[in-house]
Image (tube, rainbow, N blue to C red):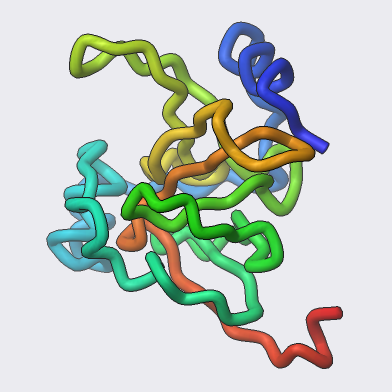
Length: 154
């Protein structure tokens, strides 16, 4: 299980490499993403709280990167944080997301990106529920839910 201590180590030392890398030009990203998806994932934007389509959805499935389709979060790790963004306690695997120091807006945070294509996803904080204590605060426009039946998801 990933902990805040692990996250801080990855910020300092780097995240384990992804299984695959996806590289595209800005023009290519703009051709496959909506303007909002591009603004958030490629320009480090964010959604207004409570406006994302996945804020209150709790259906079984996998959340994938909207840019490259990489599996990022399992719906079983999703929880209602009350923050206005979809929140998760763990990524699907240790190298699914990349962790970067973010000192924008006069604060110190940990940005999370898709480790395969560098899409900005959101941030991770150490105020989530036990046992990990992590809260991955993710923009809905940066992910898509691939639904799964409960029988296939146990």
